[in-house]
Length: 383
Image 1 (tube, rainbow, N blue to C red):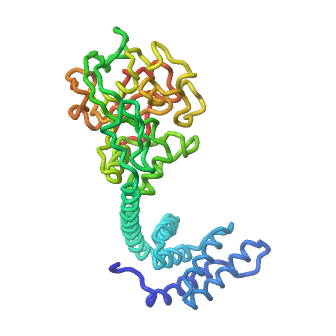
Image 2 (cartoon, rainbow, N blue to C red; image 1 turned 135 degrees about the vertical axis):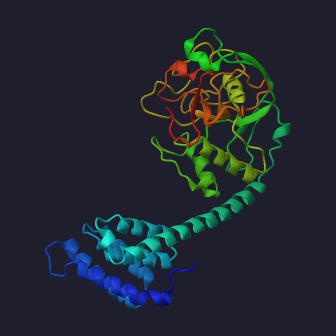
Image 3 (cartoon, one colour; image 1 turned 180 degrees about the horizontal axis):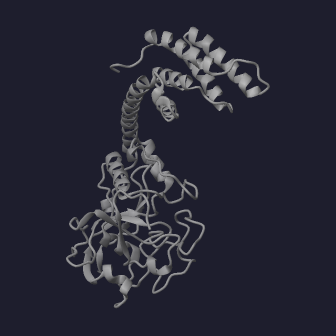
């Protein structure tokens, strides 16, 4: 990189910085064994640096930082410079962040150098991530191309398929017509779900289960999802992925489209409600009521593994409860003017998107198929 570090100009400055680190670390004998170890490691660093052994020096620095002693600021800067030279840009950024966060460090004569190196390291890290994502995306696309084509358009309703090993299992939902909106008139909490209106739905495929942490990890490891790894609260693997915004969900379906060549997307509100009803016109796919034997709600302990409850009449799991689910639509505060063909609403407040289904801590009324709420499309938290 232009303005970067090279091995021929590193060593003199590195040795000077290490000398400063040794000076900053008291050399008098102490009873504290960890300080004695720290002093020994500093001397080892001088020897390994003199010999041009960068990796060995970095190992010694890592051991030093694992000790219960303060890390001298010059040593943090040395770690950053060596890590940058070793193409470990993440470690360089972390060391520089620790250095720049120190109290009074603006008065350090190496402060300007650290700021410049921080910019270089962050740019190099971003470029490295982009390169790795492209490589992983190509590998995921190649792996998927070797899978047996699903022929989804020729599958019958109720048939399951998977486009490749790293993508979710899907199921074909039959086309049909239904009344979208509350199944009972007059409930004030259904204000945004009115007016009830007829919608014709074409056959489509939807994932059998909610997207899991394993599904999301496949996307990240396959060069997608912007490299974002959501934090979990109740484990990962077959738990439904959480802390995912509408924008994040769009990055996931973009990855699915890229690796499969198929037209993956978020379902429209109408498609989601139609699938959630499972062929019934009651509040729930289970009928007029729902219990905790049917879905995960009123549950103080969080999410459960996807597919823990029986599927609905269309063969889809967990449309009621467990976690909220994003749809494609822009928010409108009623169904007035909604399309009759089941397509997503692309007009309205598009900074807000619609999510459905309720979650583990909600009560039964929130889980009704017609209930809808808005959330900021960049928000990774739901109410």
